[in-house]
Image (cartoon, rainbow, N blue to C red; front, side, top):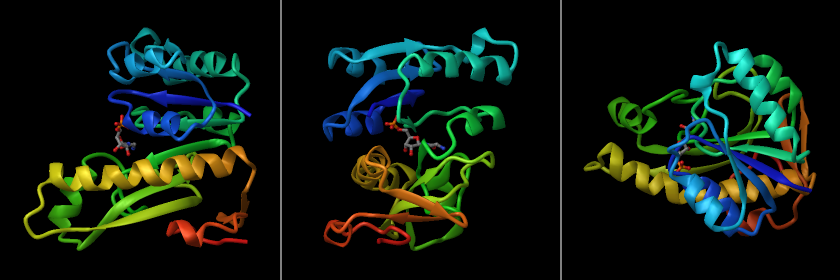
Length: 208
Ligand code: GAR
């Protein structure tokens, strides 16, 4: 039961997975300067860089990335701020075990700059989503969400800070459920087998 985590930068969500005691076998970044690599190495976790800029196409990059991941034969692959669009072949290879954290209440605000766009839209509730990855960007069965109230004087930075606290809460929990095979998908809907979900006050689509 192991976990490989992909990052592109700061890596605070990867850190939350490590601090939650999850079995992280390796951290892989598409950027050599990703700050999260330093933290992971300091924890004695194997780190690798597969630089997208070294490859002529998305297909070649994704194939090299998959080869690196597969060295660890992970049960789950977690995208923790991994800022690359993945090819359908890559997504299919890790079907039902590729999970992403996104800083909005999907399906609202897919893509980038989610906090600024949420403020511009005038929403009063914003948040984050953990979902299984499918070929469509920032779509796929939702495992958990957490909501944050938007304040009148919010800036994108202040809002991002509060959402990030929630990301660090729901991401480790959702990844743990995947590692423990508690997540079942039927007709695009997630069902989680965990008697303690309501006690943890998480928003999940269905608890069995
Ligand atoms: C996080 O807010 C994560 O939700 C977001 O990037 C940030 C990475 O921070 N991911 C995406 O936008 C993916 N579409 P981190 O490196 O500190 O975890």
